[in-house]
Amino acid sequence: TQLLEQSPQFLSIQEGENLTVYCNSSSVFSSLQWYRQEPGEGPVLLVTVVTGGEVKKLKRLTFQFGDARKDSSLHITAAQTGDTGLYLCAGYNFNKFYFGSGTKLNVKP
Amino acid sequence: DADVTQTPRNRITKTGKRIMLECSQTKGHDRMYWYRQDPGLGLRLIYYSFDVKDINKGEISDGYSVSRQAQAKFSLSLESAIPNQTALYFCATSDLQYGTHNEQFFGPGTRLTVL
Image 1 (tube, one colour):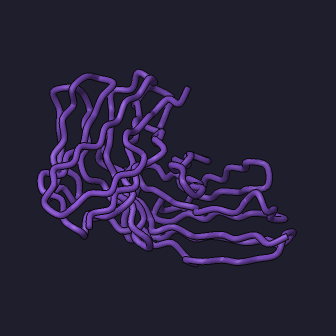
Image 2 (tube, one colour):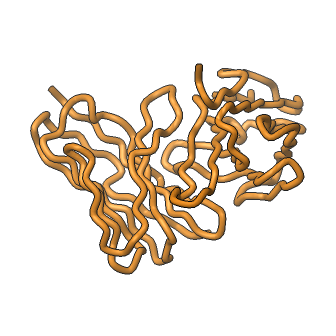
């Protein structure tokens, strides 16, 4: 099993604050994906990062893949209540995805 | 209409009963997956299939079986349900093509409770 550890597990912040979520592993992945999941729904893909050191931006969200392709981070600038949800990272290797345990984000108005 | 659908959305059953969860997709993808989600454990892969004749075990396949009836249909069975199989179950599809990275698309999930 190729483990992915996410931190923090829970995060409760005020609207307008910045935050960073981390996804770490001792395994190298050929790509890494970030998903957001809302209650009662399936995860929805936010981004895929493929190259070591790659940075991708999606509006206020910035995703980075570590140089060694073992870790990744998600940074949200000026969080909004609509960012509330469960954020999951998933590493891809050998035709399978390995998911982290998730970070539950609550953005308070 | 949703691209990946799951039925039922909720199910309560008793220990020892046989249960089937169904998944259908209209995305035309070859690859289909079944995951279970438990609080604090993320999603864990149960089975996956890359075409109608291909079935592979994931990390937690014990107590489960699957059937790929067609490219668009992938069902998960619990032959004799037990309480620790109470979880949220997700079906997903993907399609590895040039220029893509095997992005997965998830269904809305089935909440299964085994009493």
